[in-house]
Image (cartoon, rainbow, N blue to C red):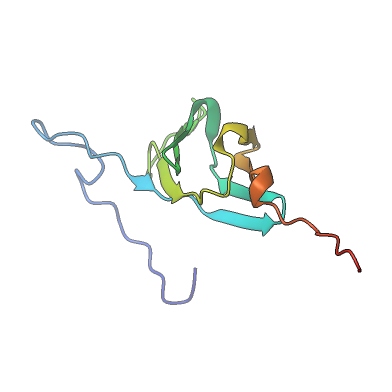
Length: 135
């Protein structure tokens, strides 16, 4: 917050839905990712706070890698929620992979809200040293 931020009074009815109003559409967010590449392949780290393994879907099809997830926001029973920006955050992001990568050997690991994907290069696509004969 900075000096110009003001807190406003809650208006009556601002938090509740009127009769006949539909529920707000779920908000879909592109998760922040870090991608590291070396001669062996690519490692992708995606921030998915509040996501559990059963709410995570990682798919690869025709060189398209997609990540879809739904976070669970747990509110303790003793806490009364006054305002929520996103009640059930959904994450979605798609990447196009080069044919240099072996999609059948992708490894995925989820720990503390961070998804780690290891995407190895195909053997034929890895750099290799060629010995030069003299004579």
